[in-house]
Image 1: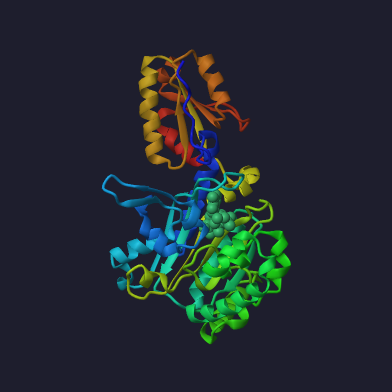
Image 2: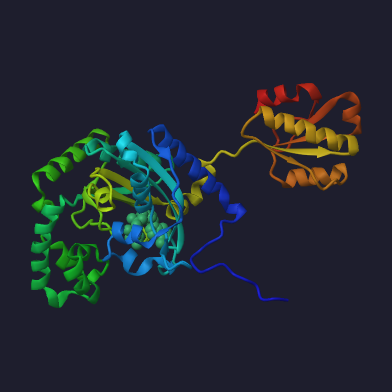
Length: 421
Ligand code: ATP
Ligand code: MG
């Protein structure tokens, strides 16, 4: 026997038995975003490396160590997308979309990061993200947060909202100096990672997960105290909207997010049921990014949520959340009945949406087909044998104790199903 081939570590199969939750998540999120007027878009999984290095920033975990990058045959540097925003911004600019007015879009697809795989952290994972271009008012920041809040409610997920403001790039520059001074004075307490960040990206030290730095970080000067007036007003307006929408939040002054492109609002939704992989959604405003990527200045904001982590949170509640489609098992015995069963099930499916019909393909005896019908988890069996055919009827048998078997006119089966399903 040849050696078995295995999938790559951190890149998982979605097995058919587990796909129900994912289909449900996809359709719930799609419907929610469509209902708020967001349009679906799709960008390629592969982009020029520069799309990400320029957007995300050279001194970030993603660009420094997490990207899958290689040289194409012609020497171009290509990268598997580690996140969705950079590609969407590239798309917006390439197709001149913000010129047509405010753009509200969402995407759903795989992302790739070379990280250490563990529960809730994979090398191929899936995100849904929404982005808005051309709107600067805090009202849109609140709308995005409100959409995610509604999603957690509909999924019965308990998550806490943390918000912060990173101010304008000017106010962040002066804050950066103050913060650098503070950490320089305490240089002996910093770990290697933070020492490296001290000169390249000192705000990221606030994001450190090292417990030994907790007290040093908690005493650090806070961005929120150095905000420019415009950012402060914007942040206050966001808070007002959240209060009006009854969405509780905490201001986390250490929330800086892992990507360079944010300004003003940043936010995260955190669940305490996932250990250190607790962030299920993160987002923020990136007013400078479109220009930095070569477009006209365009205010923008977005979020991305990790579907694996959300799936983990709802896996025990799937029965409570998901209503199964009605499932019929079509049993047919004899050649004529086989033909008729195909014809009838096609007619039913053309007339009744959102049901499942399993047409028996084992061509066994009535008894063996009925056994399969019972095992399949179907709600009802449709039975067609010589006797039924000769009378132009079909036997309709509840399989889960919902009443007794009935004989229905073949012609009337669609109407019967419409009445009871
Ligand atoms: P973390 O701090 O957990 O590494 P992040 O800040 O790198 O997250 P973002 O880039 O903001 O994450 O991505 C948004 C969301 O995507 C995260 O909140 C998380 O739910 C999900 N996510 C990020 N990286 C992974 C991964 N490697 N595997 C699974 N989900 C992920
Ligand atoms: Mg990360």
